[in-house]
Each structure stands twice: as structure tokens, then as C-alpha cells.
Image (cartoon, rainbow, N blue to C red):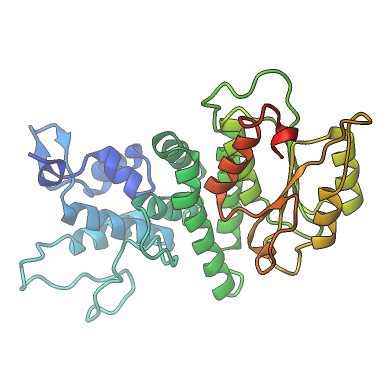
Length: 333
């Protein structure tokens, strides 16, 4: 029989809700928010009604309701959907004539149609639950790989938090900052999965253009390159044009990735200057490939010596080919 027929395991429910299995067991023991039935009398298996009660418990505790009171409300909400005589669920402090807000939206964040891991991550972020954020992010990277984890879990959740912040009068700023920090930490901790190129090839230089503070997408690219064993130098946010030009001439990178989040920060003159920078011994001077990354570069075709990938996966493929085609990165560029 399928898992859905038996019900979900505690681990699966914990991932879905963004809490630890220990928390679920504690809620069961202290407040009676546990599975209605147990397989073989021992193993917890959570039916849809059980999960709905837990989702309501998560929503209420995240909004500041004490756990014991939230548990009482969640238990009242756990009724048989076929029982039309059962009273409607009542949110703590709410109108008994109105059903409680449907759970599952990540505690009010505009997530839309996303992976369940996004909802768990959002709930943990709203609760400011750092240990659970770390555990969920490690798990999603290990299970799906870094690129899928970024594109389908991390980035959608970050965007939802950002939209909530912009539409709620500076509320949720702390949620965005905490989530961003833990995403950044998870990206830096992603282990390499391949041996990488032999020898000491020139690195990929990654930098945000002057005035650009959004670094997380660039950090995701740096993590993806590290995962593939490719050498990088990450310079981070808002690198001055003079400093970037000096670093390029000193290092002789295989490629320079310039991140721009908005058209107001896209620095086309700087990109052109770097694309024409030459370094190396006389008679064998080379130029780096300039990779225009981010939505800020949209609207203008890349000039010779430049490339504009449409996403993380394409950027990783483009930069990876520098180290696998035509012998050396410089020749490939």
C-alpha cells in the first residue's frame, strides 16, 4: 500500500511544515496534537486531518498565540470533513461564524504554486527558527542538488518574503534578513561533487557592479562553480569600477561575472572596459569572457566578448565549458 494510504511519516510532515521532528513529538506529548492513529501501535502516521491541525498550530504560534491555546484551537479544527454537523474551526480571538484562514500558505507569504519545501522554509523563517532553517536548507541541497535547491526552493521563498516586506510597511524585514543569512550560509557550505580541472587554471571573478547590493544570486553561482571544482574569486557587493579593473589586470581571470539586479545599476561602460582588458606576456595576451548576469542587463544585446545567460543553470554550463573546451579557459573565451 502507498505512503499516502498509510499517511505521512513524521519526517515528511516536519519537512512540509518547516519544523523539526522533535517539535512534532513534543506537541504530541504536551498538547495532544498528534496523529489520530498509529501504525502497529508505535509508528506515527499523519493523516490529512492531522496535518491540517499541525498547519493551524504553526500558523497560530507564528502569529504570537501561546502554544497551549494554539493547540486547543488546532484540535477543534481537526474534524472529519464529511461530518457536516461539526462546528466550524475558530481562530484564536476570531469570529466563531467565520472559518479559520486556510493554512498552507507559509504563514501569509505570497508563495503561490511552489514546492512543499518552500512552505516549510517560509514557516521556519516567519518563526525566526534558525536551527530549522539550517536543517531544511541542508536537506534540500542534499536531496535536490544546489541548482534545483536555489531555483525551486531558496529563490521563490526569498522573493515571497521580499514581496511581503514591500507590501506590509516594512514588516518582515527581520524575516528577510534572517532567511538571507541562512541561505547564504547554506550556499557557502555546499560541498564540491567533482574533481575540477587539473593544474592551476585562472579563476572566475564574480562581482556586483557599483551600486548593486544584491549578492545572493551571485553567491549561488559561486557555490555552483565551487560544487564543480572550478576556481573562483568572489568580491561581493558594489565593487568600485577602479578596484574591479585593477583586480582583473592583477589576476588574469578566465571570466568576469558582473551582477546587476536592476537596469539602474547596469554599468555597460564598465563591462565594455573589462571585455577589452588584455593581460599576459607580450605576444600571447588574452582577454576574459565578460558574463552579464542578472535582470539589470536585459534590453541590450551583449557586445563581442560578452555573454548574457538567462539563469543559474545556463551560467554554470557556459562557465564550465571554458574549462573543458579548446584546452584552456583563455582559448575557449
